[in-house]
Image 1 (cartoon, rainbow, N blue to C red):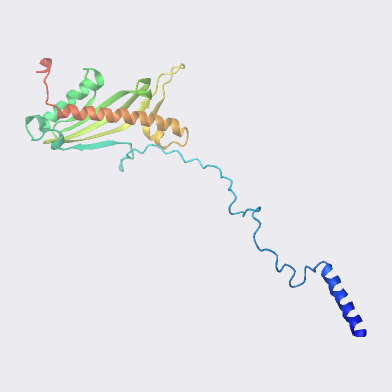
Image 2 (spheres, rainbow, N blue to C red):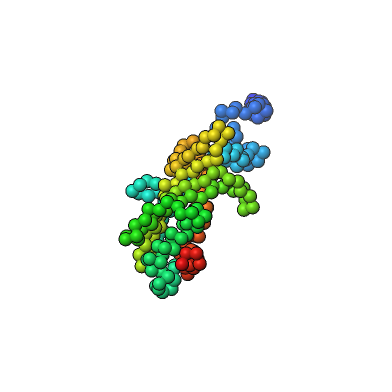
Length: 232
């Protein structure tokens, strides 16, 4: 009888123990709980990351050639016989090229009035004090005058070839209401830490017109010389 009573008491104690909340600190507290991750909580790595501020690229200025000796902006080129005529003849002799260059300068810069030359006929060297109108271009159909460019153009001649160099560029602006005219060397525009985009834009416009001028010069010296009836 005592054994039966003891067995019943022990059973009741077990039932009561199961009915109580399991101690979280017990070794098997979460054993048997589903280990499937909660899909409602997204990993921080998968969340869209806020986009950072776009870093503006530094403005890229025009790159021009600086003469290593004078440290001046220069346009330099050598024209070989193959770029003048297929075979050297009287039209590509150094004397002919020299005379042709003078004739081109007279017409290009002064409309027939002789420009200031520094000539060295013996060594076939010609220095031309040139100028050209300066323009700001809106598009290929519109432009406005912003003064003029002055420069020095030196040409050296040999049989069937020549070398040219344009340098000492100055931009002379339009006269203001106060009657003053600004004059700035290209090197100032090229290196100034102020008004970078404005000065750079002027240099780009000038570069376009200078290369056009050089192309015209090359064409004139390449074409057969035509003597004007008034110059014979």
